[in-house]
Image (cartoon, rainbow, N blue to C red; front, side, top):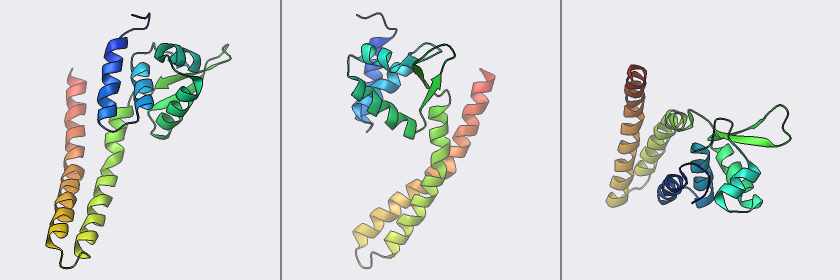
Length: 153
């Protein structure tokens, strides 16, 4: 076992994220940063923590920055940048996807209308559009519920 906290749990979390569709190395970096101290990790510390190359960490961090999960910051007096997981990253990813669900539903409606006589394909597109619309309607309520629960706890 290594000196880093929650290593086994972080690796299990990364496996879950990978199974859900996230590339493996970004999932591992994200979970490592989840268990990181408040000031995060440097790239070198991530390499050591994960037992991977600097190139692997660099690519994973770049991917996570594009998704707005990770922030790079400089620390006064340090030469190396540190990486931290943004505190509200998961919350923001749900909030930010509500318009995506709405747009997806509209596109799928257009697709269903343009499929002509293919009833199976039309129904498939219509069902997915309905699900996307359901998500777009429910997410704001779920977010409100979460905020109420979070402030109460």
